[in-house]
Length: 282
Ligand code: NAP
Image (cartoon, rainbow, N blue to C red; front, top):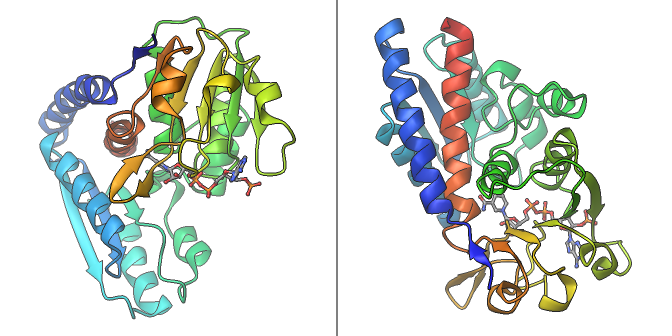
């Protein structure tokens, strides 16, 4: 049976370390690191995510600013808020909660966040720096996944890693992080034929697809590390992209949903905010 990698435990340990570093930062700089979160509209899932991010920020002793804007806000109005935050020296990180309402120009709004305050790691420059092996701010979810993989203590060098999903926010940066750790990386996506052919030979499988229980037992090699990024709501329940019970019978390590990657994503956001603050003052 696979050993469960608990995101709750790894995340709690990470947050304790961040809390201590925040306290040190405050003593040295006479201010708290500050994260500003912009939410446009009333998407219930986004509201929950934002609440958890703000709660996490305050729990480690950082300051949070929250801007809740109405659904019908114009592009100019949202741009104005982001520009103000970009110019404010007391704001270290800016997070615009996605998805934005359809009528807004997401790319334009995100482009107004300076790379140094891009704590989500979504900017082309931050993605580019990761790609050339000199990362600055890395997207929170893949960064959290790496922490979970490393918590197993396995030596990553030369391991076969398969990432299923190629989004700019999860799949691609995940593949780059694994490559930077000297894994041999294969990226699968919706046009990949016979995904099982790749996953059956993988020591590490990261699934970020958004399809409930996509990864089945017969696709997984004995002893593999299986990381489930997926969050799917089925009949009011949260279900991952991995058929957890069956895959647990063959995998060596596995993350649950909920309680796996999710808590790590927020921890890495806190880490990125602290690092953004330290670059200004430290
Ligand atoms: P996304 O942008 O929709 O990307 C999904 C990826 O999966 C795409 O690359 C797509 O391929 C691929 N895909 C879709 N159907 C497939 C299939 N049948 N076979 C193989 N590949 C397939 O999603 P995302 O933002 O990366 O998120 C993925 C999942 O992770 C979602 O469930 C999301 O809710 C979850 N998530 C969780 C966290 C967390 O903190 N736990 C954070 C972010 C995301 P194409 O490129 O070919 O279309």
